[in-house]
Amino acid sequence: MDGVIVAAFGRHYEIDTPEGRLRCYPRGKKSSFACGDEIQVLPGGDGQGVIEALRPRRNLLWRSDAFREKLIAANLSHIVIVVATEPGFSDLLVSRCIAAAESQEITPLVVLNKADLHERLSAARAQLEPFARLGYEVIEVSALEGADLLRKRLAGLRAIFVGQSGMGKSTLTNAIVPEANAATREISAALDSGKHTTTFARLYPLPPAQAGEPAGWLIDSPGLQAFGLAHLSAEDLAEAFVEFRPHLGQCRFRDCRHEAEPGCALRAALESGAIHRRRWEHYRSIREEIAAARRLNPGW
Ligand SMILES: Nc1nc2c(ncn2[C@@H]2O[C@H](COP(=O)(O)OP(=O)(O)OP(=O)(O)O)[C@@H](O)[C@H]2O)c(=O)[nH]1
Ligand SMILES: [Zn+2]
Image 1 (cartoon, rainbow, N blue to C red):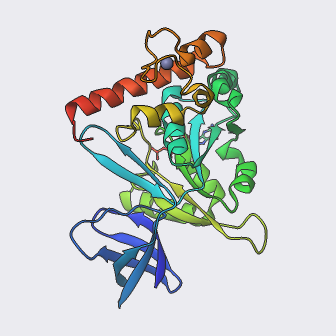
Image 2: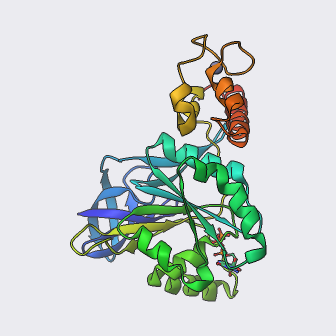
């Protein structure tokens, strides 16, 4: 039977199948599946099943530091990077998420939430300007006011919300997917608290963009403060900055590290303004972090 992983708990998985939701276990000890993975399941009765096989992935979003890697989601069409007017957000984290997306050929989409908090709106817009200038879509919403525009935009997509804690990912999910509301209420009741912090990723169905087209889904994921990209090589990283692409391979030296070498095409693009200074800083700090991770663990 075919199914899709809707939640991953390490040792077991929740899988939606044509016969309903099953609680499934992998065959062996090793289990490395993610939300969005398409799976072949052997149902075992009483709502349980065994994972028989993984269908080939179209892509895989993951993060890594020197010693650990974590699968986030598979088979995505879009990564929705949620930021907010309040509290402040890290534009470096936005660049990291975009780099992760670009390296897997997933389309990034930036959502600026809490647009109802007007005093902070222009500062947040200014922080997003380097991304908007690159052609990345930025959508302003207020989860408290319904997020209708975003609901329409996401119809038919296979998307994940990523972002720092407190940006409003869960509130947006609740505004967009009615079933998510019920799930949040259950968890809150179980924890006996009004405050809800997402602790694991969960996939919810979305309607198709038009009747007759395929349905989509949306994954709400826990807030992240870090998005390590230790698995990307220096070349992968430069490629993941889309505005660098026309300049790659144009440096005087084939092995240019884009530091202080003469005839560096990237630095020339920076000086001419074709590369935004902020994005250059992001690139440098991610590259440093990758180099540090690889010094700690040469196995990468
Ligand atoms: N004013 C305003 N507040 C919002 C909006 N969206 C969310 N909030 C508030 O922001 C806080 C954080 O929202 P959450 O949805 O829990 O944030 P999250 O990104 O899911 O956080 P984690 O679950 O920790 O990852 C809550 O108090 C929400 O009520 C909005 O559009 N406007
Ligand atoms: Zn160079």
